[in-house]
Image 1 (cartoon, rainbow, N blue to C red):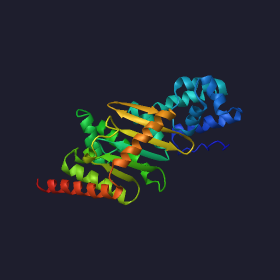
Image 2: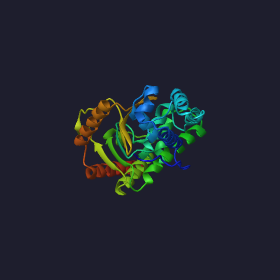
Image 3: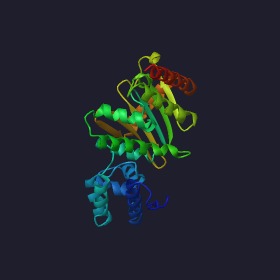
Image 4: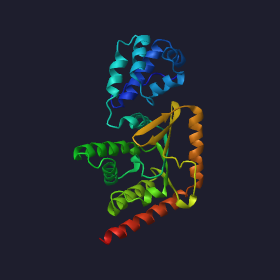
Length: 280
């Protein structure tokens, strides 16, 4: 069994809390199943807390303090974790994304947040909140740009996106913004930092017409699926549900253009936006 993770101050708060949980559990001589029983959760869920892929809830923290004799440590730190720069419905998914080994995503209408140029992200948030004060929009854009820093790691995570052609054609922010957004996307593709496939209009019907899908895997925790809605989100860890969404993603990949053909299409659409911009 691997030893407890070191408490690295540069790690995310949730990762630190998980490392401390593992340390205290092993010091108490408890298995993950043993600790899960009084919380009415599975051993695998305890493993997800320890790996930092799930957010600890206050009632769980209270029970952990009691069982492990932690003197309120988990309640105090759990409260701190509630403070997030992300919307409530997405905070847990964003935190899981930060420690994921692979991120596979289908996006039907927008370039995904991790792959957005700053000007595109700003236009997206202005579309969401047209009356928001400038400082609020600035904070949202800053958080989104900060999320993308995980792409700077040379090996992880593997980011594989199926992007609907509609996301390329919708003029978010106008022609100049779209040209910059697509140029940013193709730069990431040419650097081999990400894999992008476009699902063309010609593919017709497909199994994910109901909305976006994100799949995440982790080195030491079960995979997760995230379903995004209008001001809502659902993070799923049920194995059968995750397998079903993995099949959905595989079918999308099978219907999408190859990475090379996708790059050529995105380049072509970016050129169209450039020509439009020059006409004005």
